[in-house]
Each structure stands twice: as C-alpha cells, then as structure tokens.
Length: 103
Image (cartoon, rainbow, N blue to C red; front, side, top):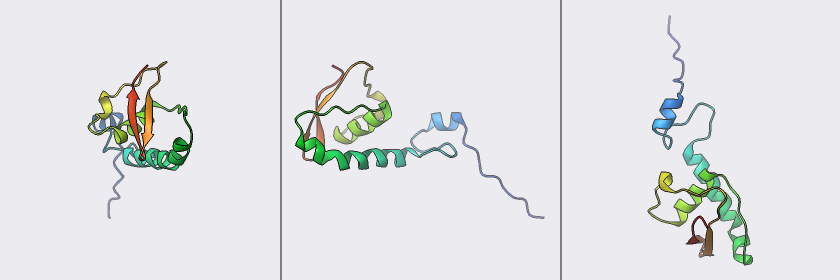
C-alpha cells in the first residue's frame, strides 16, 4: 500500500521567519503581491502625469513596495510611513522621485 503524503502546512512562524519567500497556504505570495501593486501603479502613471496633485491612500505594504521600486537601495522593513502623515513624490519618467517623507 502506498502512503499518500500531505502537503506541508506553512506555520505562522515559517512565514514570519521568511516572509518574502514563504507563503501561507491559500495566501498571495509576496512576489505576486509586489507584481500586482507595481502593475497597478504602472496603469495609473498616465493619470499621475496629467494632474498637478493626486492623493493616493494605501496600506503600509503597498506604500513600501512602491517606494522601494522608486528609490533604489530602500530596505523594505526599514521604511516607515507614519500614520497621520503624508509623503510627496514627483512623477518623472515613470518613477516617483521622493520629495518629502512623513510630513
């Protein structure tokens, strides 16, 4: 009789220890999340370029992914967008150039 192996269940500890490479069962991987955010931002770029000012409200992970894509060398975990504050970027050439962080 052949034994059927069950897929390994990812635990909270597994994910916390390596969140960029480990995906909880049934969840979206970090790579898929990042691609989804950056694809959406790319589709918004024409709108960013047509307006003088635009307000974008997003969750911390989304803001970190965007900032990290626009500001080379940014460490995901070291970036802190403070609640009740805003940050400004100038859109130029499809990238956001940081003007002010946490004003």
